[in-house]
Amino acid sequence: MILQQILSGILASGVYALFAVGFTMIFGIMGVLNMAHADLAMVAALVVIGAVSAGFGPFAGIAIAVIVTLIIALLIERVAMRPGRRFKGDAAIEMPLIGTLGAGLILQNTAALIFGNKALSFPIKATGIWRLGSFFFTQGLVYSMLVSLILLAALEYVVNQTNFGRMMRAVAINPTAARIMGIDTDRIIVATIGITSFLAAVAGFLAGFSYGLATPLMGIPYAIKGLVAMIVGGVGSLRGAVAGAVLIGIVEAIATTYFGSQARDPSVLLVLIITLIIWPNGLSSAFRSK
Image (cartoon, rainbow, N blue to C red; front, side):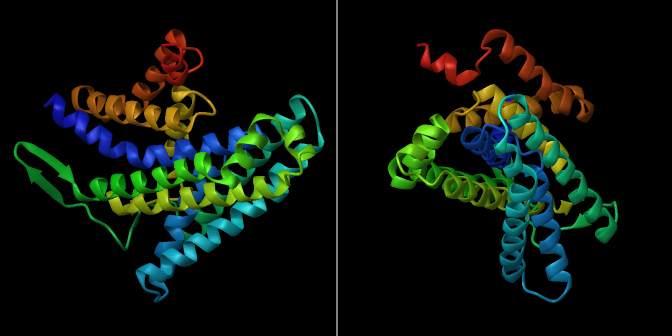
């Protein structure tokens, strides 16, 4: 039983990892939190539903959703995040935080007005069960994990092995020095927003694909888990964010099995509290210290 829950938690963590990595990249490059990031996943999922309902094919609907998500993400960066870079100190952090929180609320309420505040059936789904020996696997979660692994591996390569990745890391370490060295920091930030919006869109597709449903408020629990995974793994560490997502997925699955669905969200926060007590800088700092 316990091994089954561990495996289920690992599979569920694929979607969580995409959210966690998106939060980590934005915070690492810009030093701020984009509180609307998870709501972009909701937008992508609902746009797919709307596009398919309008007569487009599933793949055309996904393409439309990616474009719409990218446009909205760039608008949020331009209107809610970029103005904060004119300031120094706390204002540079607080203004984008409040702005993106407001943008997320606008997206949620707009989606509720258009689609209704209810769960909608996702047009592409794989909710069947596979059996391997004594273990059971949800098909959608297996596919989601495979897609997440491919995207995370590609992102790891881009960040660590390409010139663009080196520029990203330079901006994350010291934006002023990077600017002096001739790096267009605004272009790097916009590109990072584009990458993270794509990750959010894919995460939204995978969530709908795995569970068969999408709602205007579906981004809220994923925002919590993505942020907790980022903090647990160590802020600024992509690998740490993935490790945090895996840990959250396992704990969540075990807590749900033994204590019921009402223990799912409290177990995530419990992981955060325990981790910060033992390793205030997250799991990545624990590995570095060895």
